[in-house]
Each structure stands twice: as C-alpha cells, then as structure tokens.
Length: 359
Image 1 (cartoon, rainbow, N blue to C red):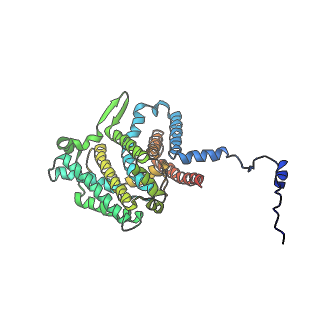
Image 2: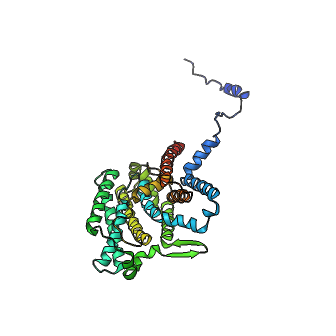
Image 3: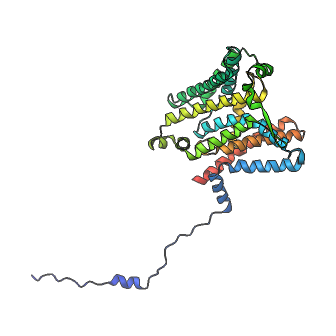
C-alpha cells in the first residue's frame, strides 16, 4: 500500500476574492424626521412642554392685556397665588414619580396647620414647639400611607383615598370646626404667619411663602438629579422589580417618599396659615386636586419614572397665569376651569405621545 501523498495547497479562494467588491455592507435607513427629533427632545427634557406652554400663555395674555398684565405686581401676584399649590405639588410629584398617587395631601396639610394652631392656643405650647408637632403629624400620616402601600401592598389610590377621609374627619373633630382668628395669631404667635410676610424688590412684592416654594423645588431638583436617593426614586417608579433586583430597597424607598411627602405637606400647612392669616379647618379643601393638576400639566408621567420637579412648578404657574389673565379679561371664572381641564387632558395625551419616543 503506497503512503498517502500530501496534496499541494492551492489558493483558489484568493482568485475569487481578487476582483470582488471591497465596499462595506450598509443598510438603508430613513433619517429621523424633525418631528421625531422634537419628540426625543421632549422625552429627554420632561419640563420642556410645560415651559413652552408657560411662555406662550405669558406672551398671549401679555399681548392682550399689555402693561396691566406685565407689571411687576401682577407677575409676583401669580407667584403668591400658586405658592401653596407649588409646595403641595412638590409632595405630590415625589409620589407620582414612584407610579403612585396621594389624594390625602390637602387633608394632611390642613390637619398639620390645625395642630400647629391648637397646640399653641389650646395647650399653651411655645409656637416653635407647636410647629414641630405639626411637622411630626404630617410625617406620621405619610408613614402610615407608606407602610400600607409598601408593606401591606395596598393600592396607593385606595390607601390615600381612605386616609383623606380619615384625616379630614379627624381635622374637623379635633378642631371642633373652630377657626383661630388672625388677630389672635398676630398677637400671641406671629411666627405662625411668617410665610405670609411680604418684602419688596422694586415694584415686585414677594412673600416668604414664595421663597419657600422656590427653595423647596430647587433642593428637590438637586436631590432627584444628583443623589443616589433620587436615582433610586426614578428606578422604583420606572420598574420596581428591576430596581429590587439591582439592590434598591423598594419598600424602604416608598416609605421614605411618603414620609417626606407628609413633611412637605406640613410645610404647606404652615405656609397656608401665613397665606390666609388664620388657622381654618376648612381651608385648602381642593389642594389635592390642584396639586395633581400642577403635576400633570407639568409633564410628570402618571405612570412613574419620568418627569421633573421644575415641570411641576411650571404647571402651577400656568394655572396661575390662566387664572389671573382670564380674571383681568373679565371672563366668567368657569372658563378658567374649562381651559385647565382641557390642558390636563392635552398634557396626558402629550405624555403618551412622548413616551413612544423611548420604545
């Protein structure tokens, strides 16, 4: 048997490649349209929509009313009117960013203010200590909400709806539906009216309640965008299961959000006393609806995980601009509610459209 002879290698494949095309494979694709780019811009900048609407509404009312609207006093009056809504809206924003909702924010705000007043005048505590008790009340209400939602796994809507009724009833029962008059507060506990005090900058008139709203929004903006707690909040709102797998303690995160929301509502209660001058158990009854309105118009997604606290403030200002502008035009107040209702529906529809940019 003859031994196998190694065949001579041949390079036929090189002959095949010799005259072959050297062009790199490419795939035809359509360039993104201007509308597509705009939608991606809005998705990356959640507060842009509300800012655009705010600027347009200022321009329209400014052109219609002229100096009557564009005076320093009128513009700062808008800030004064939306200060309470902006503070409560900040609390609501944190909750909605976790894909929840808090219908009890207004009731917690009022109960906290009533506790501050009653502890000062009924029990004779120093006003500073009474204010601290008001903050503890707000934190406790938020803690109960958080535990029922995070640990007992009850739906946020149901929990906060029930808490709204409980806190509202407790507020009337505890205060006996009595109002502490502004004259009594001014004489014996003026610190309760601190956020209602005004100061002038040229022709503009500001209250310390406005400053509190601006500082609160600025601090929360920094916390949400530059701290681990803020990143965890967005993660929980976007996908709680994924956040849990990545090491985020979802239950503790949710509880901390609702506690902080309660504390912010107590701050709003203190500011409310300054705004109206008195401690009234019937004040701020629509604060929960107004806060949700500011959040939705401000571009914060009701599905959680997306939005900016700045957008909420812009949303509150939009409501203030429409309210003042239409009032100066002499229109029926119902037109304000009608247009704000339209804005809410349009804002939710816009959010749905913008969310498609991430798919």
